[in-house]
Length: 72
Image (cartoon, rainbow, N blue to C red; front, top):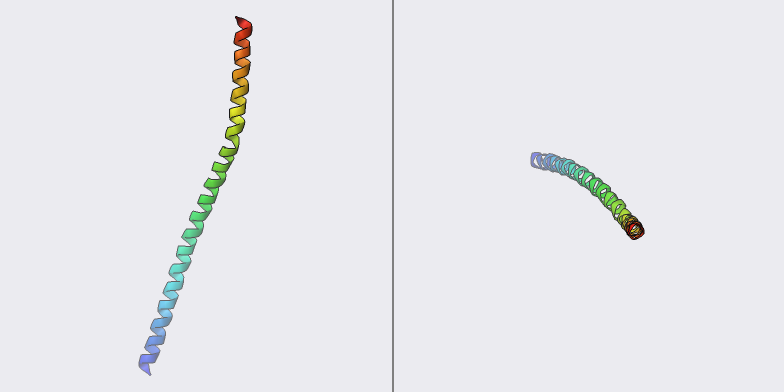
């Protein structure tokens, strides 16, 4: 009977340890996932702005070329 009680106590403690370790690992995973999500959003924002900047640079280059042509 004592062996059964010891086995139940040992099993319960092992289960509690596994659950605690798993919850901590899940918290770390959640934190990393949140950070990656933030970085992806920042990257997507940058990727959306690049074509706009490219068009603005083209427009500035055209205006500069026109000014240079008018100044000659």
